[in-house]
Amino acid sequence: MKPSFFATLALLLVLSGCVALPANDHRVASVAFDKPQDTLLGQVVQASLPPNALSGFRLLPTGGYAFDTRVALARRAQRSLDLQYYLFHDDEAGRALGHEVLAAALRGVRVRILLDDIATEGRDEMLARLSAHPNLEVRVFNPFAGGRNRLFTRALASIGDFGRVNHRMHNKLFVADNAMAITGGRNIGNEYFMQGMANNFIDLDVFAAGAIVPQLSVVFDQFWNSDYAYPISAFARFRLSDDEQSPQTEKAHSLVATEVPDPLGYGPLADEIDRGKLALAWASATVVADSPDKVAGLTEQSSNDTVTSNVVRLMQSAQSEVTVISPYFVPGKVGIAAMQRLADRHIRMVVLTNSLAANDAPLVHVGYAKYRRQMLALGVHLYELSPVRARQRGHLDLFGSSHASLHAKVVMVDRRRLFIGSLNLDARSARTNTEMGLVIDSPALAGELVTLMQADHDESSYRLRLSAKTGDLEWVAVDDGVEVIYTSEPDVGALFAFGLWLIAPLAPEDLL
Image (tube, rainbow, N blue to C red; front, side, top):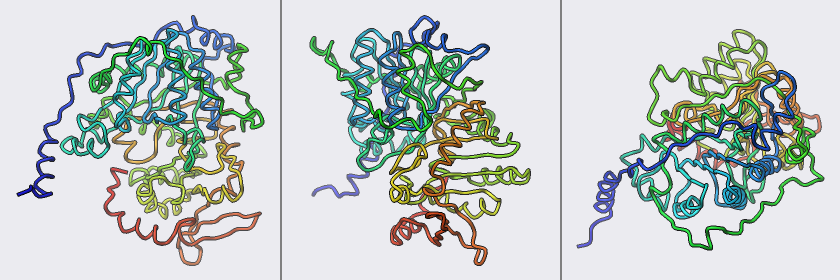
C-alpha cells in the first residue's frame, strides 16, 4: 500500500528537524583598510573638504543616479569594495553591478559581498563560482540549513528553526576604499533603479564621503566577522578553470540620460570624482546600526540601542515638526503612545506611506490601517501615495518615478535632522530584522527633501481625514485645484479589499 499524503508529510516534518547548519569555523576575519586618503577616492574627498568639515553627503533620489554612482565607485576603487544587502537580484541591474565588482576584483581590489540568505535559493553554485575568483569572497547571513534550491524546501527544512530564520539582515551598504559609501533604502535589482517591467520602487539613498565612512565600515566588519555570516563555500564549492580565472566582464550601461537632470540639479557624481572635487552638503552625522546579535533575540537592556530606539529618540527630540516617510508603517500601541506625546507638545507630524493600491505587502497595510483613525484623531497629517494618480498625471517628481510603490525610509525632524536608512517603522524592523542608517544634521539636505516631497504632493497622493458629518475615513485628492473625495480604499477593487479583510486576522502584527 502506498503511504498516504499525511504520512509522507509527517515524515518530511520529522526529517526537517534533523537539518543542521554546517560548521562555520573556516572563515577568515578581515576588516576595512585604513588610510583611505592613500587612494584616489580618498584624495578626492580630502581635496573637497571645506575648513573644519568632516563628512559630506548628497541625496540620491532617482534610480538612474543611484545605480550610476555605485558603478562609478566600483570602477574607481583601488583597494576595497564592501557590499552588504538584503536582496541582490539575478536580473539586469544585479548582473551589471556584479560584472563591475568582479572586474574590480580582477584588477586587484579586495571585494567582500555579504548577502542575507532570504533570496539566494538556487544560487549557491553561482555565488560559489563568483567567490572562487581571487580577491572576491561572498558570505551569506543567517543561512537556511537545508533545501537550499527552492523557497518551499527551504521553508520545509526550517520548520523546527523558524525562530532563527525569521530574523533577517535588512541592511543596505556599499563602501569603496573606506572613503566613499552609499546607504539607504535600495536593494540591488531592476525595480530599485526604476528598470522593472511591472513594479518599481520610489526610494532614497544617501551618498557619504569623509570621516563617517570608516564608521560605516565598522558596521560592515561586525556583520562580516559575526558567527552568523557563512562563506558560501560552506554550502557549495567551485573550482575555476584556467579560462574562468580571467573572464571578460561586461561594463554596465549608464542609466542616466543626459536630457533627464537630477531633480536636485546635480550632475553625475562620476564626473565630479574625475574632476577631483565633490559638491556635497558638509555636516555632522552619526551611524546607527543594530548588532548582528539581534538575530539571536534582544535583551531588554540592549534594546535601548537599536536603530528603532535611536529613531524614536530623534522624533521625541523635535521642537516643532516630525515628517515620516515609510513604505510599511505599523505604529502599534507603542508608536501611538509616542505620537500622543508629540501631540501633547503641539509637535506637527506628517506621515507619508503607501496606499493599499501602492503597497506591495497588502497584509502590512492591514496592520497599518487599523491605526489610521487614532493617528488622525491625534492631529497627524496622513498621506497615502497613489500610483494610479501618478500615472494619470504622467509624472511624479517625488523621488523621480512615474509608476511605483514607495520604498524610501526617512525621518525628518524640525527640517534640520534626517534619518535615512533601511528601517521601516513596523514591528518586524523593530524586533526581528537588523537595520542601519545615518542621522545627519543638515538643514541643506532637509531642505532638498522638502523640495522633493512638495514637487507633486497633492497630485500624487491622498490626504486622509475624518468626515465632519459621519466620522468615517475620507481620502481627499486634488485634481486641477478641485477636491475629489473617496469614502473607501481608492484604486482597488471591492473584492480584493474584502478578501484582505477576511484574512487579516491570520497575520499577527508582530510578523508584519
